[in-house]
View 1 (cartoon, one colour):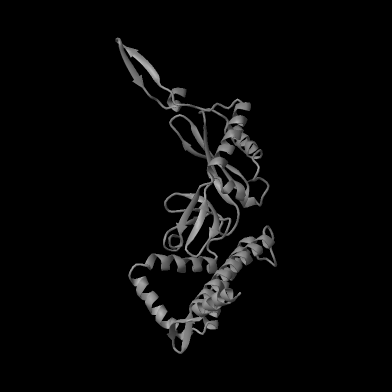
View 2 (cartoon, rainbow, N blue to C red):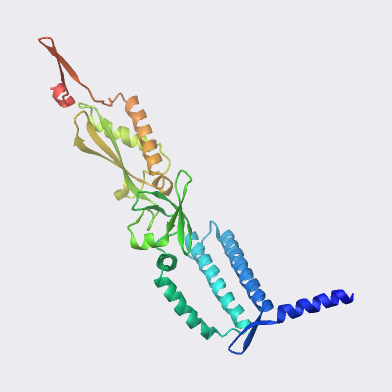
Length: 307
């Protein structure tokens, strides 16, 4: 029993022995460990609180505040808890917070010598969260050509997930300094153009009716919207081998965020409808002429051959 008591006394003395003194406050190993525990507990508690808020608000909105805004509020609460708990821990230890001015100067020197990118991404993350120029669920296109859905906005980076389920980690400064196309910034619909061609001599009205009928079979297409969002079929070009049309139609968020798949769906239905109505889909052709035993290969537009 005496040995156990001696061990605890020795441990207590070892933990409470001052390691250094700052402005009249003694800092021991126990106080340093206590600060670390406070910081770890604050980080864990803040992360747990954010997850609980996201779970409680998933798929919901309150008084006009949508889900993405609630996500950003949860993220701001998390960062606020981190900072406040850390400052409270330092104050509880007796640390003079006015000394943080010196620390801020040291951090400024560090930023000047190599932390510019980290600090730039940090400030860009705060701007994105406050201004809401980028929201969870937005479909964006980067200047590099990469496209995807925003799944996470952090203070240093934003995670974009492509339709092939590939996560792209993008530094926040790219959204502030570079050009980013946000396809769903103001609303969750947009107009797309689906090009297709038919042979010369086909009835244009039949082509128009076929394309509009095909569009009705694609889920997510806006068919009976307001007048300015009615689907249209445009004749856009007299091509070498075909009359070129475009189906101009508004689509919802699901189709908008899958551009290649969306175009494939419309083309599939258009081809089916054109075939049903016996409207010819052209293909490049060559005319062969044999003169004096010499093979003469000429390519002529289909319109010339029709004449």
